[in-house]
Image 1: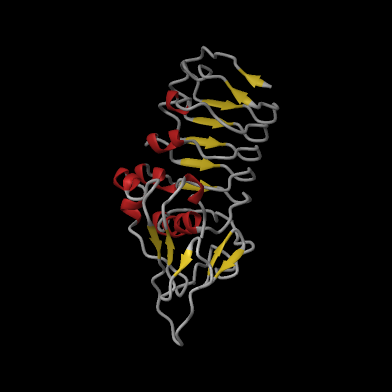
Image 2: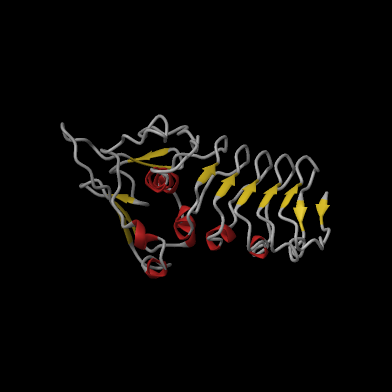
Length: 238
């Protein structure tokens, strides 16, 4: 059902909307609910949200979105410093733009039982969360590596050092990185690591291993990947 009711209860502080088969929330549904502190929307059919819809809830500090079909975490949450408790378990989330959460101060964040693959961004999310929630009550994110030849068996125990990568997390998602690699330019991918005995770098793209005989991209003798004349199709995961 479409939750399009414009509620006119400005003094209301807690709303329970669980198990109502809600699949969409209209833009103005929360417009006059500025005093809401706690909202329960679990066990519905929600998938996405209109940008800015959560910013109307200026007093919201506790939000429950468990057991829906949500695919992405709204960017709005990164602009809600009053939000302290967020639960979003048992959904369809496979990627988290975790750097948005650096702007707020969550006290509890639950998102276990989502299909989170253990790729580079999610691995960084795992590492960041271990630091961010070190001194508070934090519930396991609960995502596991699947189909990864070289990687931790479970992202709750990121022990892989030899397959690590070096990049400045503060800068890599900033505006200045947007123009580093553009269409028509060349790019080199490399992996910094130490091991004893010396390990060999092996690159995989689309589940296919790359070696020195490959020319597009070119695997160099020192184990780097050189991609010439970048195209939009070069957006990929290695």
